[in-house]
Image 1 (cartoon, one colour):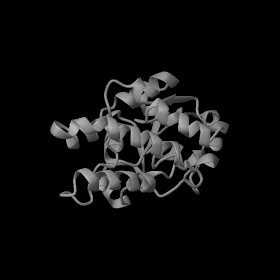
Image 2: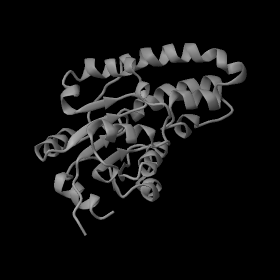
Image 3: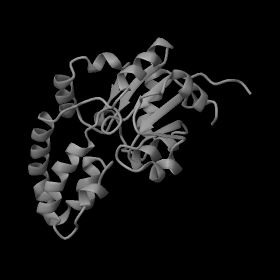
Length: 219
């Protein structure tokens, strides 16, 4: 069988590029305790959901009036967050680029959030050939729309792409796009994400181009 080429690596942002999930747990823990004290631990259930999905499910009806206030609080919180790379990420990206692999961020985050990222990590844009945000998609994860658009943007076929995701919705999105999927066990345990991913890792240390190429050709 003909060997496939690894042409594009597509990365979700939070919990995949940045170790930000614990910070979001703090923010949403506060919000959920304020508005849904009857549902302890809700901040963990909504992990991997877009803001629109959270609002539609948990802030409709009488609580819809609170959305604008929550959004302002979230924007302010994100401006002060730390955006630190998950261990080994920059080394992996350098190795991928050295082998001609294109890289993209595919995130449900919006442009204002990304402006906070760029301030914290001034060289962030140099790591990627494309950055796709929520403004670029008509459908949210778990729809494959975002990853299909990223592949098109980079001129890659779906079987030439590897997706890196941590949330269940994100993993399902990569699967639905018929791409090879690497699951980051940063938000959910490895055993929980295993059915939705071809490989599970806790960070990028010890992972390189040759490993990913082999994984691509196993599927």
